[in-house]
Image 1 (cartoon, rainbow, N blue to C red):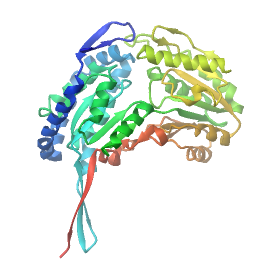
Image 2 (cartoon, rainbow, N blue to C red):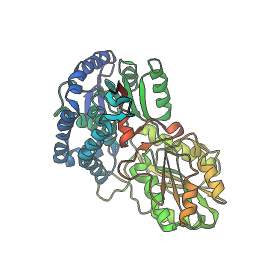
Image 3 (tube, one colour):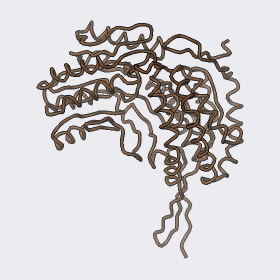
Image 4 (cartoon, helix red, strand yellow):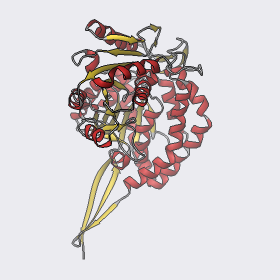
Length: 453
């Protein structure tokens, strides 16, 4: 039986560190400890919890360089991106706490005969199971609003990135009462045990297949779930689009973080009249993205996180080429480093058009007109993000409004204005994060009413 979880740098293979694996049989007792701590944490009220949680931001900023280096060594992304992830979390804490407090404030309603108040109360114990691709930010998306709402949390970081996950938890534990945040380390066995334990809420980000298993397991106790399950995000390039801008975005969004982003552009549908020019420009942009160790300042694209993920991507590329797709850039690999790859002539029936790639691959398909582009973009079980690049505003908006994704960007990525939710449609999401309504997903709505007069 493995007693420690060893974490290696995907760029070099060196051992970064290790953590003890949590015995499966210990998880029910951990949940019981978390439950015992929950009442006192809730009793602090929003003001008390907000004051405690606000204290973590200065500590994050003070350790940002150290944490960024650990994140890069453990997961592989370029150091500048890792630093941006850490600082983005720290700098957003005060606003996030204010947004959560406003979202969960009691709401009075009065119709003249009955006075009611809508309360947003914590569920109790939240199980947070998080991925490796944003191993500091994604735990924060789940753990932080759950805690601010008055829940306690049992947190399982990815087995690929346990060290930075533990570092995030340790920062919070310095400002929290005992047992309000507990950490479970391990793999699928620990995740299943946590889902099956006596928790009220499960927040998970990861694969669609794992999300379906969680939903099935949660159904036995009708536990609440928040699932963000990745995507197969399309990009549509209309005939009147700014090709320079569109190609630059396509390269950045297909290849950043080695394509290991849930809203990476994975399918590109380009109008025939601009397809040749767009593809040529995309290949030029691809050549400007050096691959290497994330600690090297020149690196734009780091390694894949694991051999399993690398092999999945290579299999999809090889399968597409055998089926008739043409390689026009990249395709090579060394160790866990994959060259950013551009495929053209990708057909809808190919596996690489259907299943999530999660790697640095841009797939280009030529279409004849807007209707075909929309039809192919929507031909997926996923529905996280989508992007449309076009010139005429009404036309571009018209195409965007026909797409079935939860988040759609026009001449930009899917990231919305501050206060908008992170929301998936179809099999990319079940509930959602962020925004007033997203924060309320970590609470039970209760209505207390009394007669007037």
